[in-house]
Image (cartoon, rainbow, N blue to C red; front, side, top):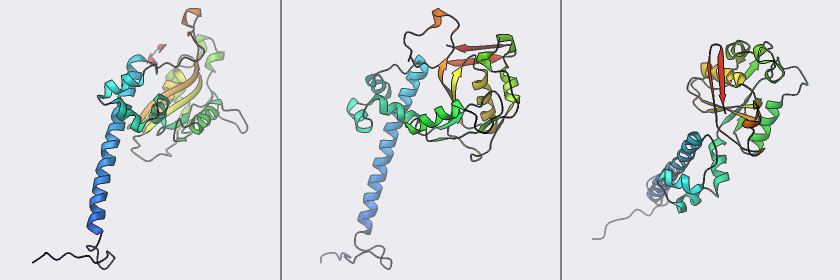
Length: 241
């Protein structure tokens, strides 16, 4: 005798009839495919990030990312149109935090870092702008002051507060955005302030331009993005490059 098959259409009263099991099977299949795709994409992103950190530069090729991820070029182009889209993916989930001015913000005043952050977000480099760091006491403006008069990171830290607008335990990416980085005291102090409030977050900094000490430090091109570090201990600070 042939087995009986329930062909009754699925509905609220009959959740196991008709196409219910087929739909569940399809859902399991597509869910597994999405997970595999997410894993492959993350491997490409991790490979690109590792290369950027090693070279302190975004000067790399798609093939280098493919080789580092141990995947295929065909797989890469299944997820990204090219290098530009890969770079966008590295930043698109980040919250952009404008670096505060050297004095408390006043109504109508130009806040260059905020404008830059909003332009970056509009271009796809960031999920949203989050003005989390506020200057509550003025400090000397770095690029207008002599070296001995510039504020140190601890002085900057004491002059800012961090808003608690994000969920407790926030573990996403926060990118500090500044117009010009001189020694790096402001960026470093803001990063320390953010990490005190959101210790699980990944905090990095971005500046449109950096100062140089002499002609020997001038870049080969006006537009030459680099990755660098800021090291500090009491009485000493160094930005590289």
